[in-house]
Length: 124
Image (cartoon, rainbow, N blue to C red; front, side, top):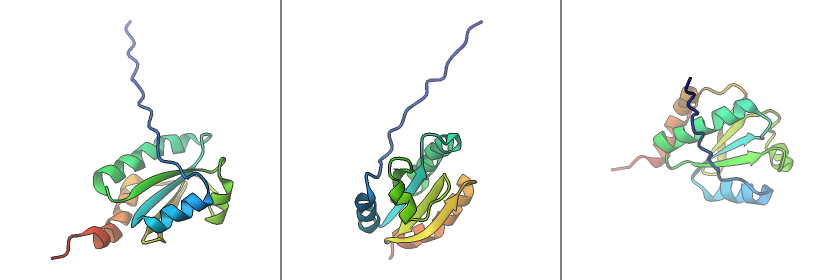
C-alpha cells in the first residue's frame, strides 16, 4: 500500500516584536490586521493561513501581522485581548473590527469589505 504524504508548506508570517513596534505599525499603515495567537492554539494554526490567504486575495492593501501572546503579553493586555485567536483590524489607526474565538472567514471578509472599499476605491 502506497501512502502519499502531503507536503506541508511552512509560512513565516510578519511578527510584532514589542509594544512600540505594534503602535508604529498601527499608526503607519492605512489598513492592518493583527492576529493574536500563540503556538499552543491548534485552531489558530488552522485559521491563520486562511485569514492570510483571504487578505492576499481579496484585500491586498491590508497588512497582516502576527502577535504571539506568550512572547508579547503586554501587547495583548494593552489591547484587551483575553482569548485566542483574536483579530483586530485597524483602518487609519482606529480599530474597526474585533473578532475572537469562532471566526468565520466569509463573515470576516464581508465585514472588512465596506471599510476597505471606502478607503481604497478609486475615486473619479
